[in-house]
Length: 225
Image (cartoon, rainbow, N blue to C red; front, side, top):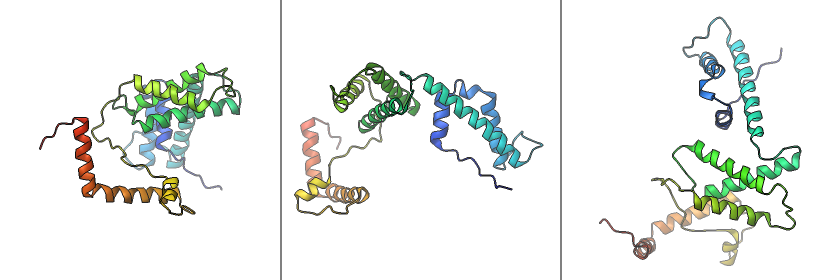
């Protein structure tokens, strides 16, 4: 008899279902799935009269139905008909490019991460609708998606994050080569570690203190002590 493999449930799995299944928090099947999960994990649950394996099968059936419903609802909201690999690739590329620029800017319209996700998806929908018939031979896609995203980001207020961190240095392989260092075999992870060492060294130096005070004075930031 083939051994059963438990369904792996990721945070992204849940985020996608919650964002795309209508009335997610009010549904009986969602509640029953949670009760089955408690039973499977050995916690107190109203589920009785079945084995753990039967509970897993019931839970998985519910999850697969929810996941399929979420996909149907999500694709139904798409601004273009996804009829082939090219359409899907173009929409996914726009979505990823917008999300990347939003991440670089620390885009955070509210304290709810779902608001950020919904906003980025809406922007990708709008961009795809606007450019459904665009011939990208005549236009530069990267310029168009960048300008579109920057206009959206500039037009939408961003909630201040008290824990926000901003980079103060930039390091790439070209810079290292310009200063006479070989980058052969230097991985992205190694580049990040090197940048981290530079940052630690600079931020603990007297030059950092001098540059910080100079920048704050030029900006007009008031000192408290």
